Image (cartoon, rainbow, N blue to C red):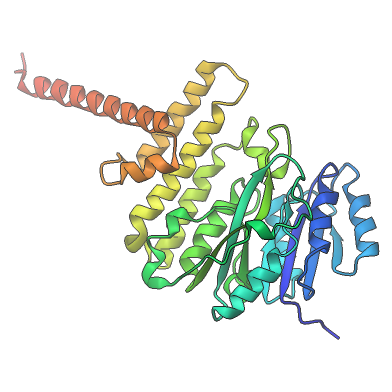
Length: 346
């Protein structure tokens, strides 16, 4: 007999032996009982598979699957969506962990608010497992905001791009999928589902513990030298394309431009941590500024104060300098052409 799961949690795993036990421990400790935990190992080369098999053998909530070849986070999550049976679907990265009451509270609040398309809870950056299975009632609060179509526009910029501190209604995402073989898939998925959703419930208790370790880990990969750094333009281009297909581009243009440009600026910021020669970083920055300019032009029509809250001000100023340089070069070209036209033929 098929169980009626309220929530399905999808956990993609790749070489996460260091933190995986913490992650799975936090999930099997959930106070919500009607939950399935779908753990998919993406062809790990460390001891992750043994850890998964051990947990799955002891805990019936866990169902384990194993990719024969490494497919990446996007493809692995897509497999999980197809396998899941819950009314709501959530995602957890294998180097993170969650509060033990997280999914119970999220589901209960959903029921109290006519089951919105998306429920989002608080996310806290951590470096260790200090909060693992701790009683965090002192930090819990009842604050919530129900976002509907009429006030979604003003909230879209402030939402976290992570999919991991959210639950998505199955009906919302069953015909959607993560982009595959591409970095920063969360930004695209979250933004497009936010556009598609009719109602979103925002909670603010610290429930999801996002482990940030600059040396390794799914949650920190953006701080390493990344040869696929230009993937961010695939993400932002697809966001704009999706909004146009949904006939929402004109309504959300400024908000989407702020999301896209700030997401690109964050990738530029990450380059500044790379251990490569400064002149190489400046060269890549120049390429980025050129690509931003070709897509979004100058920043004249954007709220710079709001953009400054989303991106580093020194990068915004660098981009302004780039635009000024472009304008000066165009001006010189126009003046030169004007002089040539005035010259009489011999």
